[in-house]
Image 1: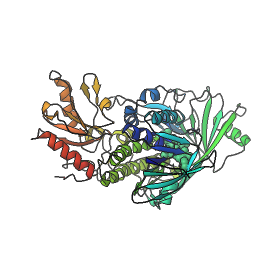
Image 2: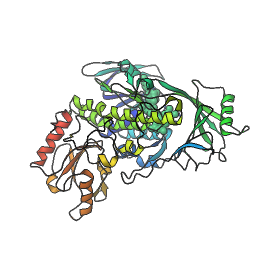
Image 3: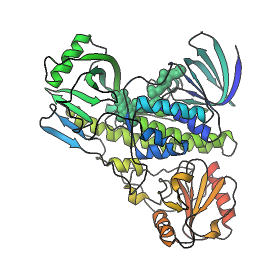
Image 4: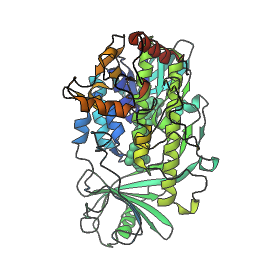
Length: 524
Ligand SMILES: Cc1cc2nc3c(=O)[nH]c(=O)nc-3n(C[C@H](O)[C@H](O)[C@H](O)COP(=O)(O)OP(=O)(O)OC[C@H]3O[C@@H](n4cnc5c(N)ncnc54)[C@H](O)[C@@H]3O)c2cc1C
């Protein structure tokens, strides 16, 4: 059996695994990724990328391609809950698509089938090695490495790979997480179960007279206590109807269901495919066991009633990869990897709570909203998180946690607070924070005193001396004085700031960085 050594082995080639491979490559670590399928996903699932997801993907150079993907054939991203098409609406939600005051990247409209090939190409461009039709058969975790047995599904040949870390991006079945004995929890124990057995019927039919593309993106149709979902796709006249069923149905029955829902008894319908899936809402109790780390659906299953699952998978990958790379390069100690769970688990918990709330109001009102968190604005869920961990230098009670211990704030409230997303600002010279975040630690300052040389940190002075307004915007956004500075992590999270100038700024920044990477930051 051939044996080879890699720094990181990623199991699973979905959004989590592919983006993790690309991000690791960006940080100089060439991972090996194995995926048992022959290619990327063929199931219509996720639609659209949140602005924060696109900010994470920006340094990979793929955002333009994602934004220009044709996306679903729909001109209105409204979400409707009603009895049928064109009838009375029980609820209607128009997502706030204009977030230009927070970020210039906006939303992406690519589908899962469009974004996965883009991520796949990006992973290869950034040096990852991808092996499709290859599965993880077994693995053993030891003190210094993980030894994995991989099988080529075309030939049956097996090989052993030794990796310093194993990233489990193996989806909701989470075989690796289960093998590690890690359980799950939900907002409340009553939600820690399969909520709904779903069947997506993909079909072709001309529905232009019934469901105009200008009306809505997503319909939750509730009639006689039966809930169904309807969404269109990127292909002309191709749509997806979601019904409650645990297994595929006879084709004729699918056609009857489509005709009944649409309300045209003789509608020509061609059933293209059927996909079963389970609606669930839980988060792993741990995101890490030694050298094994969980990302994406392996770490959390978020009901699609909010469109967060795939976006959160990419967010996990972005946050984990720079920490893993720092660890592989020997710049950090184990506490940095522990901060991955401390930061990302509360995010998944908040998103599971909100998506469950949407599930109840849109699909299952009989379940009741008892014990679910209050309705939270999707823009706050996108931009308003604040991480609390050893990788953040949160010096003072600048912003106390909300009483319910969730870490979600109004984006304006959390802007400039360590642990939150570093606000977008223009830097001058045609550049913005988008262009400089993503790869290195960045020190932003408005004053030459901070223009220091510290290994691993790139210092940027915001604007030239004559561009007073730009500098003012920066100091306001980061809530520092004109002689202060802000240290931003490779994932675009504000790690530390100094409101004023300090003596020996280079030594101060070097010490802060070292302490953040090794969990020794001394909070005042
Ligand atoms: C109907 C539906 C609609 C959705 N809509 C949205 C949406 O609008 N927005 C959104 O953000 N999210 C949405 N989601 C959620 C999103 O699809 C998932 O969160 C996302 O696909 C998770 O990506 P992942 O990489 O973690 O897992 P997956 O995509 O499941 O990938 C895991 C991969 O691991 C592979 N694998 C498993 N075990 C092994 C092994 N032993 N060896 C090799 N390979 C292995 C599997 O073959 C699989 O390809 C939706 C989900 C569904 C079901």
